[in-house]
Image 1 (cartoon, each protein chain N blue to C red):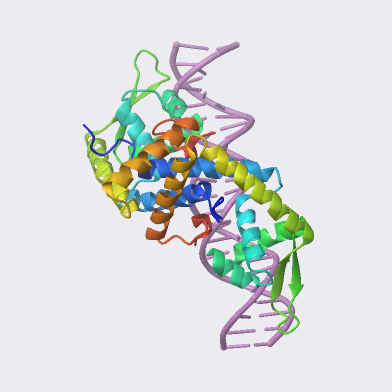
Image 2 (image 1 turned 135 degrees about the vertical axis):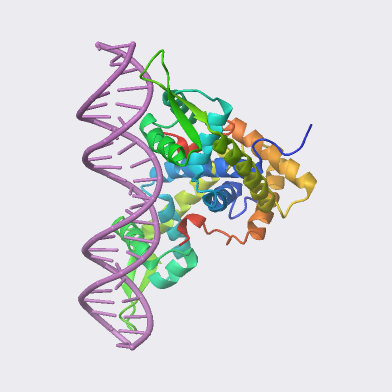
Length: 152
Length: 152
DNA sequence: TATTGTTATACTCTATAACTATA
DNA sequence: TATAGTTATAGAGTATAACAATA
């Protein structure tokens, strides 16, 4: 008998997703970061100079939550808040040089994480997996690169 | 250029895993349950009459956390605590008739969840995905059916 | 003295609402 | 009056430690 497996792909996705999140958290903790902070850092790197409101909207998180995240990154000297002279209510958020370096380290950590997680698969199987996962993510309406953990 | 994709399979797994968890939580909320409660209910169905200590060990969660979970299921009349006459410190935990019915509804919800999540894939692609995910889960040392969310 | 289950407590993460300063 | 950012507060969810009953 084949039929639907006892633990289907939906459960495996939830299980592996939680595992992946946990392992990633351990890796970035070595850099002094939390997973939400890394997502924000990437967003700032992609669109430097945006206001906190724009960043919050892009990540799909309440602006209040962003304050603490930005605070943490700023205290570590990874980003800079600069007042916008045209409209002094706004900050423009930028990566510092140290932030750029951290981004490079994050890329390394991400690659190591990717390799560890897919170690059981051949090169061809890895690309098959990636294609299937990307198709599901698109079908389910998930934004590329935006983790649902931010969502309101 | 091919190379490593910007958002690799590790990120897609985390993203899809969080999405799957969220959707599943919405579905079981209709049955008045939380995801951790459904995991416990399944564990009790698989091994009826075990003590809370054994159940906690099986799920990999602190025994103190199990108390609230068991309380919730008991208050809904889905399970029964029965004192063990040989050792009156222990409870033996069983599914009630209503609990059996809820298990059947959970199976239906799980199947609908599975179909929704893999809607973008053909039958053959679904089995390919399942095989690859199961291989990764085994390689990463994940227990079949045990969600890392329980882990200490 | 050890073990099962429980309660009390604290900590983390996040959201909601109220506030300030600028416009 | 409206908007950007902030602070205060409260609510989940979970872990750790202390406790009562039984062995």
